[in-house]
Structures are given as structure tokens and as C-alpha cells.
Length: 192
Image 1 (cartoon, one colour):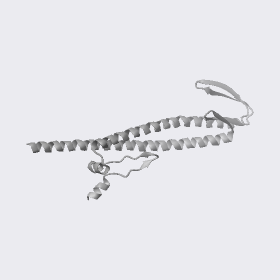
Image 2 (cartoon, one colour):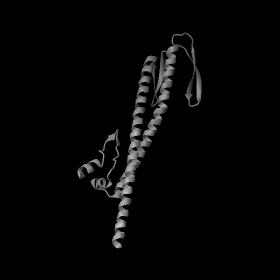
Image 3 (cartoon, helix red, strand yellow):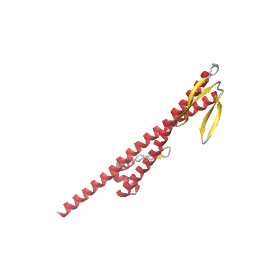
Image 4 (cartoon, one colour):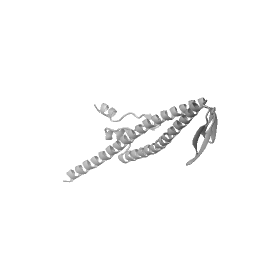
């Protein structure tokens, strides 16, 4: 019975994409003896782990914000390339307003567009045919959406680990308070 209790008192440690899984503690006393920690050391460890989780959460949230801003930009580029392809061969020029800089727009008259220039980042812009641009943008859009889905799952996993760690911290603290009260009661009864 004791071996089954100690084996079920903790869950196995795993991780998801470098995020360590939190250990849920059912039996605090067994957890402390198995880990070789006293209550203060265990609480310090759990608080440190919570801080690590918060740091990772901030990083993941920043990545999520970047992806959520990037996806509409890619979709807008895809729409522009699709519009250029639709107007191809029409014989009449196409008038477009485009953003030069933040809040600064210019008007362009586009005749037959055989290619487009795409900003790749790091001060690099390349010219692609409309078909190549559509293919590249669609691939980038698919990758960004897939990355966003993975990030959302990672954030949920991380939030679960934060919750487990907070619950474990409360359980260790409450166990310590209970042990101290029992010691005080035993001391009071012994003195009486």
C-alpha cells in the first residue's frame, strides 16, 4: 500500500518544446522526502519555477502578437498579388494607393504587372513573378498559421503548468502550517 501511495503521489516529469512540466503533489510529505528538500527549500524552488514560467509566457505572448500582426499583412499581400493577376491582360491601367511608410501613402498607375517585389526583411527585397509570389506568400501564410496554432497550444500547456505549480505551492505551504499547528498542540498538551 505504501509503495502504491508513493508512486501515485507524483506525476512523471515531461516537457513540451523545452517547457518543463510541473509536478503535481498529492502527498506533500512523500514529495519532500523523495526530493530531499525541506519546506522552505521546496517553496523557494516552486517560486523560482513560477518565475521561469512567467518569463517563458512573456516570450510566447510576444511571439503570438508578432504572428497575429504578420498574418493579416501576408493576407493583404496575397490579395494585392491576386488583384494584379486578375487585372493582367485587361488592357487598362490599374490605379492603386500604397503605403510608403507608416501613415504615408502614394498613388501608382500600374500597367501590365508581370512581377512583384516582396520585402523579405533584413533590408532584402526580391522580385518574383506573380505566380511565384503567390506561392511564396501562401507558404508563408500557412507556416505562420501553423506556428500560431503551436504557440496557442504551448501557451495553454504553460498556463496549466503555472496552475499546477501554484496549487502545489499552496499544498506545501498549507501542509507546513498544519504540521506547525500539530506540533504546537502536542507541545501544549505535553506542558499541561
